[in-house]
Amino acid sequence: MIALQRLCRPLSASCQRQLLSATLRNPTITTQSQTSIRLFSSTPHIAMAQEYKLKGITSLNLQPGEKHEVEVEGLDAKVLLLNAAGKTQAVGPRCTHYGAPLVKGVLGHNGKLTCPWHGACFNTTTGDIENAPALDALPVFKATERDGAVYITGDAETIKAGHRKPKFKCKVKAAGAPVSDKVVVVGGGSGALGTVEGLRELGFSGPVTMITNEGYLPIDRPKLSKTLMTDLNKLQWRDAEWFKSGDVDIVQDEVTGVDFGGKTVKTKSGQQYPYSRLVLATGGTPKLLPLQGFQVLGNVFTLRNVRDAENISKAIGEKGKKIVIIGSSFIGMELAGCTADGNDVTIIGMEKTPLERVLGEKVGALVRKNIESKGVKFYMSASVEKAEPSTADPSKVGSVHLKDGTKLDADLVILGVGVSPATEYLKENSVVRLEDDGSLKVDENFAVVGLKDVYAIGDIASYPYRGPGGDGKYVRIEHYNVAQNAGRTVAHHIVHPNLQSEFFTPVFWSALGAQLRYCGNSYHGWDDVILQGEPDQGKWVAYYTKGETVVAMASMGKDPVMAQCAQMMQLNKMPSKSQLKDGLDVLSLGPPQ
Ligand SMILES: Cc1cc2nc3c(=O)[nH]c(=O)nc-3n(C[C@H](O)[C@H](O)[C@H](O)COP(=O)(O)OP(=O)(O)OC[C@H]3O[C@@H](n4cnc5c(N)ncnc54)[C@H](O)[C@@H]3O)c2cc1C
Ligand code: FES
Image 1 (cartoon, rainbow, N blue to C red):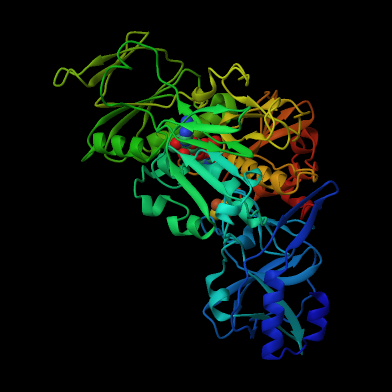
Image 2: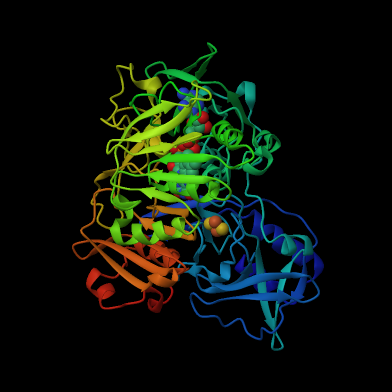
C-alpha cells in the first residue's frame, strides 16, 4: 500500500480507484502489544474516489497523538486528520456507537483511538473496531500534502457518511460444510453479537448458529433503563438482513441442556444442534426478593429485556404513579432518573449511600444529589420487610414496608437487586461444575476450564483478570463492553488459536443525572479513593486504589479522562496513588505510549 501511494502522486482516477480498493480490501495485521495480534479485515468498497482539499491545513506533519477535526472543501462534511501510528491520514470524525466527536477522544502512539464517551476503540490505521461498544468501523482516507495544502482521497458518499460497515458478508458452503467448522452461540445479547461479528470480520466462513430465547435480534440493552425504550427498530443493532448477509442462522428457542460429550445443544422445542465450538452467552437473570408479597403480587417488576420495559411503561401509563424502587445500584438509580418526571419515585437501599460498594461513600453521595435534584426520595440503610396488596386491587402491590415500620405506598415496585448468571440449563449437568455464584470459570481466551471447545462470556463468565491489581484473580463483570469484547476475544481464539488474546480494559457507563464513566475494576476491593476536580460543580474524577495501584476510576464532566485511563491501564502505565494524591492530572501525561 505504501508503494502504491508513492506511485500514485498526483493520482489518476484509475490509480485512485486501485489505491482505495486495495486499501480497503487488504486484511491488515496489527501488532497491538508485544504478545498479541488481532486481525480485522475491511469491507471491500468500490466507489469513485477523488481528491478533496482540507480547509485550513497546510502540512501532514502531525505529532503522535495529534488530531484535528477539519472541514472538507466542496463537501458538507468533516474528517478527523490524525497521526495513525506514525502516518498521517484521515478517518471518519464521529464514533459509530452514539456519535461522540472523536477529536475529543484519546489517540495513543500505537494509533488506537478511544472514544471519550463509552470506550469504543478504533484502529486508526485500518479504521477497524478494536473494542466495544461500537460495531461499525471508520472509513480511512489517504492524505497527501501538495503546494502548502493537504488533500484527502475518497468518494464523496463515504466521506459524508463517516462510517463503514465491517466485513460481514459470507456464504457458508452449507450442505457440504464439515461439522467440525460449526459454531453455535447460545444467547442473543451483547456477548453473542460480539462473537458473531468478530467471527465474520476475521473471515470465519463456517456455519454459525445463534440460539436465543429473547424473541428478537440483539439490542442496545443499556438503553432500557435510561429511557424505558421499547421500539425494536431503535433498539436492535442489526436487522435480519444483516445476519442473513453473513449467513448467520438465528434460532428463536430456549436452550435446555448441553451434551458436552456428544457436542450437541438441546432446546425446549425438542431440537438438537450439533457444534464443533460452543459459545455460551446467556447473561443474567434478575434476582427476586424472597420476602412476603413480592413473588405473588402484580405490578412488581424486574428489568432485563424489552418485555420488562413494556410492562413497566404500561404500569406507569399516564404518569402520576407512586413508584418504589428497591436497590440503589445502577439500574435502580437510572430507572429513578428516567421515571421521576411526573411520578413520585422513592429508592430504598441497604447501604448508607447509593452505589457505595462500587463508588464509595463520597462519590455515592455526589450521585445521590444528582438524582435527588429530580425529586427522587431516598430511604438508605433500610431493610425491606414485605409488600402488601393494594386495597383497590388486591392482586397488585399497594405498599412496601420497611423493618423500621415505615410504610411506602406503591402503585408499582421495581426490583434492582442484582442478577444471577443465567446458567439454569447447566445446573443438573454432571460434566460441568458451576461456581458458587452459578458462573463458569474460564481462561484468558474465555474457554471454559475443564471443557473442550466450549467458551463462556459476559455475565456468566468468571475470568482471570490481568488489569491493574488483578494478578489473574477471577472476576465476573456485568458490563456491556466486557461481554462484547469477550465475544470478540473468543472469535479471535477460534480463528487464530495460537495467538495470545489481548487484554481489554473493562469500561462501564451510567446515566445518573449526568454521564458517569468508569474503567478498570474493583471486584476484589479497594482501600482508598482519591477525588480530584470540582465535585460541587459536577466535575470530578475518583481513583480507586489498592496500595499504590489504581485499580479503577470513575468520572463525571471530565472527558476524556476515562478514555485516557482505559488506554493507560491497557498499557499498564497508570500513575501511582501518590502521584494522583499530589494532584497529577492524567491528561497532562499526553498521548499514551
Ligand atoms: C437495563 C440494563 C441496563 C444496563 N446498562 C448498562 C450500561 O449502561 N453499561 C454497561 O456497561 N452495562 C449495562 N448493563 C449490563 C449489560 O447490559 C450486561 O452486562 C450485558 O448485556 C451482558 O451481556 P451478555 O451477552 O452476557 O448477556 P445479555 O446481553 O443479557 O444476553 C443474554 C442473552 O441470552 C439469552 N438467553 C438466556 N438464557 C437462554 C437460554 N437458555 N437459551 C437461549 N437464550 C438464552 C437472553 O434472552 C439474551 O438474549 C445493563 C443491563 C441492563 C439489564
Ligand atoms: S459514543 Fe463512542 S463509545 Fe459510545
